[in-house]
Length: 268
Image 1 (cartoon, rainbow, N blue to C red):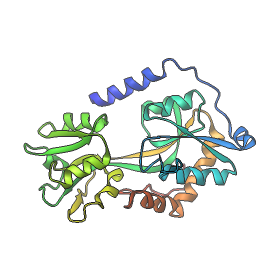
Image 2 (cartoon, helix red, strand yellow; image 1 turned 30 degrees about the vertical axis):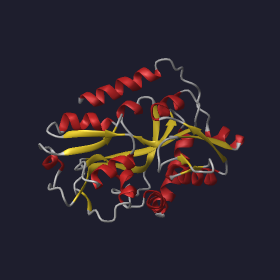
Image 3 (cartoon, rainbow, N blue to C red; image 1 turned 180 degrees about the horizontal axis):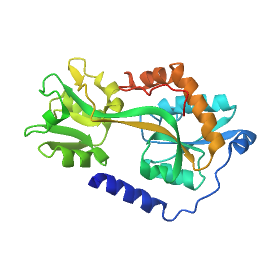
Image 4 (tube, rainbow, N blue to C red; image 1 turned 120 degrees about the vertical axis):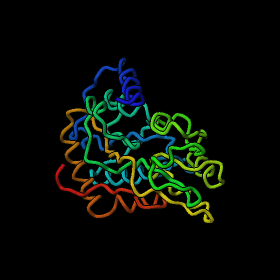
């Protein structure tokens, strides 16, 4: 197992050590109360962020609002930092966790997942000025990657692309700016979240390498055993997905289509 996977699993286990598992609020109680508590990442544009009026906006906000409307309830948005997504479910502080919650085996030991909501594609975003057709081609001397401080992909690149150099910045916009200005050669990340920022540089010929490094599936997190809620969420997601709504909302928020759409299937 890769070191960065081990580190992530250890951090997750540590964050849950002090928690006592609480009884999840069943669907019946959510409908009776008229409110569903949805955890969103407060610092994750264009998933969720506050606009100039202090109101929440973004992909998760649009989809979460649609889910609440179909349930016939109001939404209580609960700011949930990345490391809090699982603990908040386990301690019954939220009913649903969003924020690009990737399905993995460590989390599945603690929470349940719905059918996928969207994908995360780890791939290479670069320009026509840089040669290379596969991510392995970019693992060479003279290549500088732009990334953000604290991203797990920094460790992944160190382990899998050791010939490269990495320049760290503070935001997605900064990483794209570095490549556009020629101060870095590529971004190796979940590039869906970066595509909208490339539109700020019309003179740059951007390209995403056609073969992804891997595709991860992000779902809604639900407390373990909350089967009635999970089932109805799956039906809602199927309706939104099969009708093209999720794809449309994604492109409206990110300025480009999802690189790998979730396969639409009625089987959950």
